[in-house]
Length: 137
Image (cartoon, rainbow, N blue to C red; front, side, top):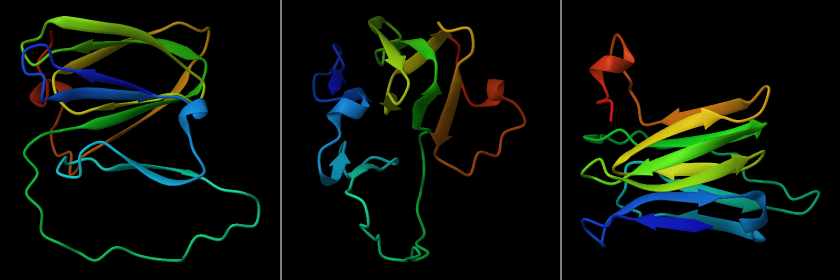
C-alpha cells in the first residue's frame, strides 16, 4: 500500500494505491472516515457468509468528487497531482490494483494492449459532460 500525501499540506492524503498483496484477512477500512468515499477491503476464506444487509437512507452533503480506479485486466500508468496541480507521483497499476483519489488530481495512460478498468465515484453525477465536473491539468 502506498499513501501519497500532499507536499503543499502534509496533512492531506491525495491518494492511496493498493494491490492484492496488500489485502489482509478480515475487513479493513482505508482512508479517513470523514472522506466522502469510503473504501473497505475484504479477504475471507471459503464458506464465509457475509450478512445480508441494506443501508439506511441518510441525508448527506457531498461537495467533492472522489473516486476509485480499479484495474481488472491489463495495466496502466497512474499520475497523481497535488492540490496546486503539481505532478508528484507516477506509478503502475496492474491487474487487481486500485487507487483511491481524495484530493488533487489524477491521470492515467494505458500500458497493455487491452486494459479493463472500473471507476467508482461519488454520486449523484449529474453533469452533461466531464468538462462540467473537472479541470484539465
